Length: 270
Ligand code: 2HA
Ligand code: ZN
Image (cartoon, rainbow, N blue to C red; front, side):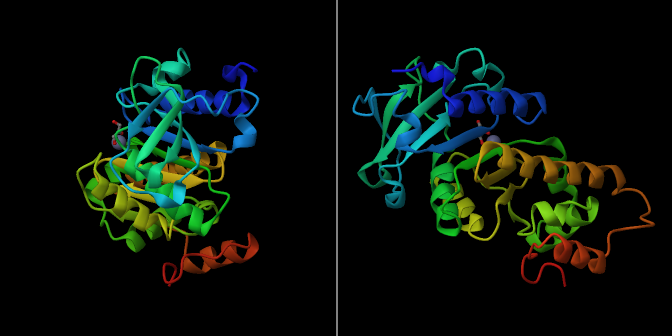
């Protein structure tokens, strides 16, 4: 077997968590990340028949039975993933209608997956229905998006329109917009269900006064999605208290959508 620490998916996961930390999105144990893997990707690195431990998940996710995920560990710091991936990450196979996670690698100090596993797995299931290529669910605490949830109307359409107005590229990068959830208790099945429901119509879901969830086909794309929304929120927080003399108009956004062949979320532009 080849060394899993050299597997492209693991290298990319480590680089992404380090990068997220460096962006200030994942203080202390903040944030969590899951990457769906195929058997083919892992077969050179792991004996998939070797189950180290079985860990109950506490919820149902029948659509994910038999799927594999590389997931950050509960209580672990993104800052440290690069120094000890086997301690801070775990590779699990979902079985038993989603009720059990079979640990195949990682969580080497006896740990387990993130407390936000419900939001991750339910979001994976929701995004897979929209896009079978979806592989990533990413959660973090970017400062400007968080700040914005204290001073901006939390209506998803209003929030999206403001972000779209802040940088020309926004409507092209996330034409589906962002959905915003009011403050809810984190780490629960309830916030998982609510997040997954919102993931049906957008790849970005803001948790008011907490952070953001992003979903995408790979780590790079999902990182870029959150990075773009966070940049827009940064502009907003720089200008919100100043008189606005100029903006990106609806007509200009329509030109962008047409030119870059994207379809803005129904009803959000008008
Ligand atoms: O502890 O970010 O939402 C990690 C979190 C919880
Ligand atoms: Zn969080």
